[in-house]
Length: 176
Image (cartoon, rainbow, N blue to C red; front, side, top):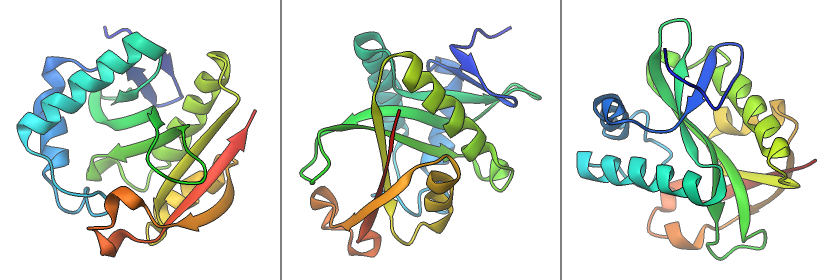
C-alpha cells in the first residue's frame, strides 16, 4: 500500500518513485498532452524533473507531486506547487499546476486534485497561490476558476517568447 502525503476523494499525492518513469516519460513525450507546454521531454529530462521535484519537496515541503488514481493505483499525472521567479508582475510566487495522462481527462480530477492541493498549501502556511496557462488553454483556465482562483491579467511569458503559439498567458490568484 502506498503512503500518501494527502488525498482527495479519488487521488493520492506522493513523492516520485523510479516506477513512475515509464508512465511519466510517455506523458511528457505525448504531443497532445504536452500541447500547451514548451516542448516534449525526453526520458532523461523526465528523470531530471522527477529528481528535481523530490529535492524541492525536501527543501520547501511542496512540489509537483506524483498523483495516483486511487481506484486503480495508477499514476494519473502530476499536480502540485512550485516556486516561480521568471520576470513577470506577479513573481516571485508559488504556483499550482497540473498535467494528467489523457485517459484521465474530462473526469473532474484536475479540479478535485487542485482543490486538495490548495488545502495542503493552506496547511503548510502559504498565504497565496498563483496559476498561469496559455490563454488558449481553456480547460486549465476553467479549473482555475472552479477552484476559486481569480483572473489577474494576461502577460507575455518572457521565458517562452520562442513559443509564440502559447502567448499570451493568463494568470490567476487565490489568497487564503
